Length: 138
Image 1: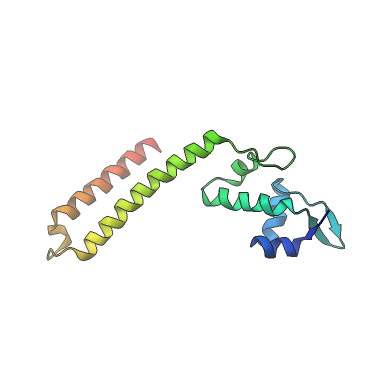
Image 2: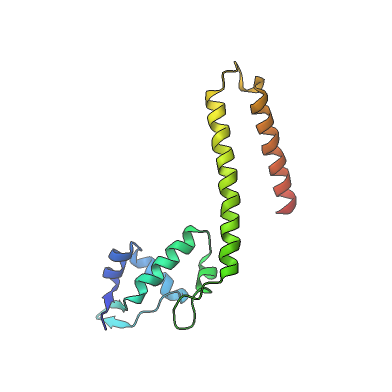
């Protein structure tokens, strides 16, 4: 079986060696031994790290990601959680798109003052309403 030392895994995955040691401490990855002082990993570790990186980018915590691996270290992805996260990302995309459009309007608005622009004032009211709603639910 081909083994990769911690330096090779760090280089090929783009994950710092310190993060690899931390992930091992959390049980996300497992070294298969040592060669001198350097941890050795199996090639499957690169797939696990790719999944960890994707999970982090999607906003999952490391604890949630740990639950996405079976006892054998193979992916066991919870489809319901993935759907829920995709839905949350879709909502975030909608909100960010609205914010982007608002910023572009504000930047290009021909009104002498932004406060004289009815569209800008409506956007401010919408932002205030969303902030109030979030404070009540959060």
